[in-house]
Image 1 (cartoon, rainbow, N blue to C red):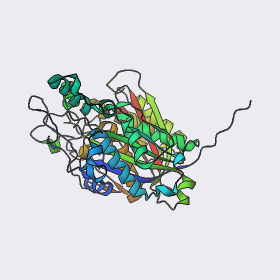
Image 2: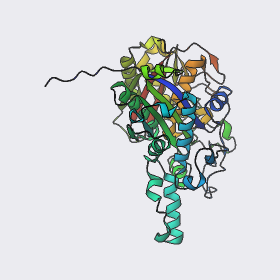
Image 3: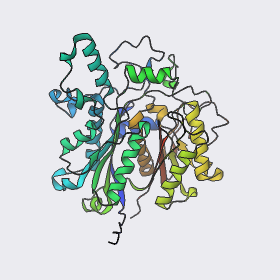
Image 4: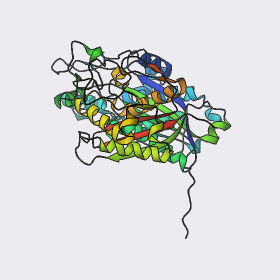
Length: 422
């Protein structure tokens, strides 16, 4: 039997929903990032005594009220990362002006990720077991901790009956979810997909684990200046939380309902370093290959990239490696012309949520013609010598943008989007 040829359909981004440490809402988060607002502060929401930890601050989501989207009785049966998921998905739905009763919901789905899922529920239920015994473990424990509880809840919330699953690749999870959603629409598995990532991991395991492996900044006396991607004096990342959701649609489906199009999704490159469970490749070879694959798919040249939202965690090793990778992917001359920024200076590292949030920022950069800044950039690092858009947003026409994500396990993802031109 002859193989069936699959014609790739065009995919566009029509909605963005952001719940971040600098704002609840897409415009609120975007405005704060453009203004260089830091979401870092001493911990308020962590439910255990953190006085014995070496780090006492992070980028928490502030003034979040889940009752805006879920009834209190129902919200108690869902982990905090699912709360963020539902909020971001609703914000994206509103932004895309979706009328669900006019859609074929069997052709709509959700690919929504988390790096560590319901880890706060794991902690709380374990403490309940230790203090009160096995009979007091919640009967909702399993759905509370499931990584796929987020994408499942989106389906329940909106009646989506198409594809639905949650990829898990640590801090690359959100970007993988978007890339996979893009592929599903390309080949005809779905017409519309909610995609992105969510994380709520600021607890004893997340904080303690990252702190003890020396990955976190310890600037307890100056939290707002702690996350400083690409700066010579960076000393680690700042833990963040929240969610980023985007609506991806097949082009004709979006046009038929009169959708506003932020950007066209053009490429999805993903690779692995196959070298170390936590550290990226020294020369950035893995992320470079991912970027090249994305550009090849999108038929976009290295000299055409205007903006890169970098993974840029503010750790010594990551920022140096990613800089090398960008040079490998684009070539030295092109790498020096592209505008780069890490919005983690503002939001902290949102782990599995980072990819969804940061692709949202890249789409907003295309829509508004503005490059968000890398804040707290004070002292240049000779090994990080590209244009990181230091401290001030910059006007620039952005035709093509990339968003990079790296994750423990050696995972590398690069997403390529471009200005929609019909």
